[in-house]
Every structure is written in C-alpha cells, then in structure tokens.
Image (tube, rainbow, N blue to C red; front, side, top):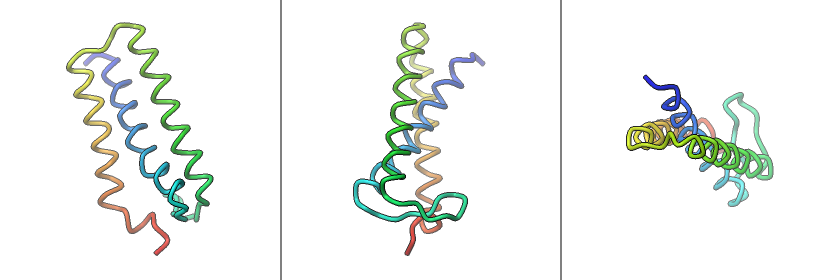
Length: 97
C-alpha cells in the first residue's frame, strides 16, 4: 500500500469531519463534542473551517507531488463517507436535543 493512500484517506476524513461542524456553526446550533461538552456555534464554525483548510493544504501538497490517481480518489471518498457515516449514525449523541 502506498503511503499517499493514507494521506488521501486523511483528507477525506477531514472534509467529512468539517462538514457537520461547519453546518452546525452556520445554523447557530449548539452541539456536543465527542468529549461530552457543549460547544458554541462559533467553535463549531472554526473547527469546520480548520478541517477544510487542513484538507486543502494536504491536497495541494499531494497534488504538487503528483500522487493523485484514481485509486487516491477512491481512498479520499472512503475517508469522507466513513466520517459522514460516523456522524450520521451517532448524530443524537452530538446534538443538544
């Protein structure tokens, strides 16, 4: 297994993790973190943006190294959808409702 597959899996995970935090921040929703603490919308928004920025920087670094292939895209999508599924199946734990 090539090392760049792990980077693309991480990029997908960052994008998938950033999405719900960014949406909760924009919609002014107070959500719980995985540690059980309530987080304010501004923190969620900041966390979502930081995930997007980290994913973008890692993508630019990997694309610059010319490691983007069809297999790398599959790893990115697997990382993304696994993170989305984690939030989807455990959504009631994260929302303050």
